[in-house]
Image (cartoon, rainbow, N blue to C red; front, side, top):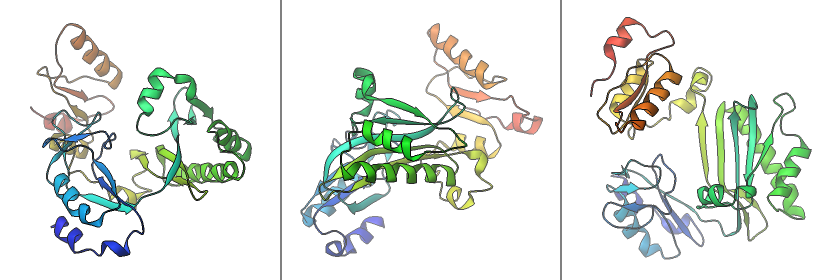
Length: 287
C-alpha cells in the first residue's frame, strides 16, 4: 500500500537535486546496515528519479540488520523520502540526563557521522561533556563554547550556538531524556542543520505529552514487552533460556551478570519491585 502511494507521488515537486531514501525502523546504524536479502544500506541518496522506486522495493517488506537491531533484523514497513542536504562537515551533538551530574549534560564531538561509536572507542579525546545548570540552562557562553569545540568558525559559530540553544529548548519542552543530533552539519550554502535526530522521552511525562506518546509505534516492539508495559512491569525479552523474576532493578541486573559469568544465558529482565501487586505478578510474561 505504501509503495503504491510512493510510486504515484510526484517526485519532481518534492526535491530539487537529491533524493534521500531512509528505511524507517527504531534503530540506528541504518546507513551501514544490510538487508536479509543482501541489499546494502538502509539509507540511500540518488539524483536519478528512476532509481527511487527500485530502491524502495528493495527495502519494503525486508529486514534491515544493523549494530542496534536484533540479529534477525527489523522489517521495514515505511520508507521516508526527504530532501538531501549538501553536507560539507559533520559534527555530533547530544543532550541527555546524567545521574552523576544530577541534571542535563551536553556531549559533543567535531567528528560526527556514522562512525561516532568508533570515535568513542579509538579517539575519546574528540568527545567532550558540558554540564548544564538546570536553573540557568544553556547560556550564550556555553553554546559558544560547544560551537567552538565543534570547530565552527566565523558566522557559522554564531549559527551553531543558536541551533544549540534551540535544541536545549526542545529538550525541555518535550520532556526528553535524550536529544541526539548526528550529524549536526555544516552545509555548502552556509547553514547549520540538524540532519538526523533521535529523541527519547520521559515515560513519566506521558500525562503532559499526550500528543507525542500517541505517536508511539509499537509494531517493532516484542508483544510480550508491550503487554508487560501495559501492566506497568519492567520487562525486556532476551535470547537465553533462564527465566529471571527479581525484586528490584539493581538486583535484577546483578542477577543477569552472575548468570552470564557462569556461562548461562538469561531469557529476560523482569523487575517485580516497586509496588508490583498480585494481579501484575500473576500476569508476568511467560516464555
